[in-house]
Length: 552
Image 1 (tube, rainbow, N blue to C red):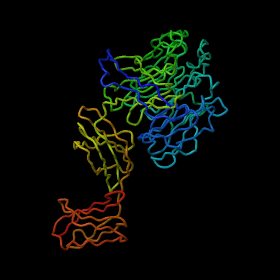
Image 2 (spheres, one colour; image 1 turned 135 degrees about the vertical axis):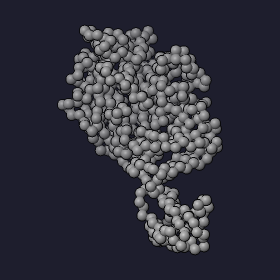
Image 3 (spheres, helix red, strand yellow; image 1 turned 90 degrees about the vertical axis):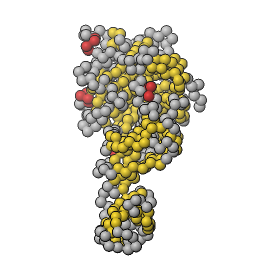
Image 4 (cartoon, helix red, strand yellow; image 1 turned 180 degrees about the vertical axis):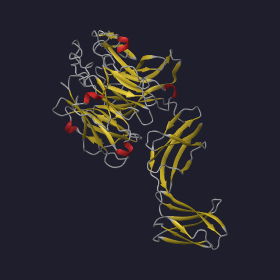
């Protein structure tokens, strides 16, 4: 399957004073082989998860699609072409609880179902279990021809947000939202819902979870991972397409985006109200079906604010697209707003971001993924491996690089929940490919998550994948007597472990591999008086115990 010729994003943003011309950005082919993909996201690690309309969620690992789907609910969906999976979202605590959420259209019903599933196995498992826990059911009139909205995302408050369409027919030339659902607080249609997963809604109180209203068909929305601000691509009726915005710091403005009293900035139906104080004006609009002489831009696809580390000049820029024209546009902070000349992606249906904040685009009919890239300006370091190994009362971090060119340093970051990271240690780069080691001697008692912030000399940066370890406390390895005059007894070691004795200067004095003993005698009769370092090491986990021996 061939992609259309790559287009260069080669233009100057005059209003913002930002030049994006050297080097040029491209939407680079990333991966093909999907069937009607609709959503791409991550689960707080290096993998990508791609949902297909037909009911399958596939895993992309190391740049390849795994042969076995992560989840297959194809037997439960209404229609594999147009009414199957609409969206997926991974729980903020997925690494520990394994929960993820799927929005799909139920087989033989006019219902959109939001359900929770759980992975099978540990955090690295590529397979999910089949057990389904219903969260919310939204009964539409027509799931094939009407507006269903269809997206989910977690906010920085860890609440699940869900978009819904107004249940209107969606046909050209007919009255939009004929039942006035979008402004009716007694229906779920044309809304953003906010769900506390510790207090699930019921059929009778679901409308109490309405968080925002006045939307027509918000097919794709996202939260800025840095600020928490909400961005919504709301498909217009006949006249205007719009991108809506709501600041996370806004606690006073009523969350009403205007439809069907307003379409874009134009009055659609008289509200007998003050428009400016009642409705939130769109962040950006562009002419839709009837207002565009070429009738090309007719269905906005909401995207993401770029927060990746590879391209600092793009930070804070919101990317969106159009389903009919395939065009891709940007909203730059205090700058340019609009489509980028000659930049498009075929059958654009959705955007997505990976764990590091880099952006992707999804082609519905071509079944491909593209990636926003700046190929001539990579971060000048290659990270080959990054591991976390538990040792007694500590966690040992190791990483290896094979290239460091004009590279500055690593900032090791630490988290107890995999979400809120704090700086742990800054480590200067060696200037060449090297092996690095750091011991976290004060780990959290249960879960410990680590990542590397790799910083270039120009202050651009990139994050590594997140690694996890739980420290081992009180292993029961003891030495007695200590101090001793010549002989020490070591208790609690096991087969396969190695005992090594070092001088205080770090010189290895002896090494002994344990075969079956659980109590080992260490004779220091021929060694001078003083302090020695003893380590017990395991072939799989490295050092598991360190002790000081005193010969007196």
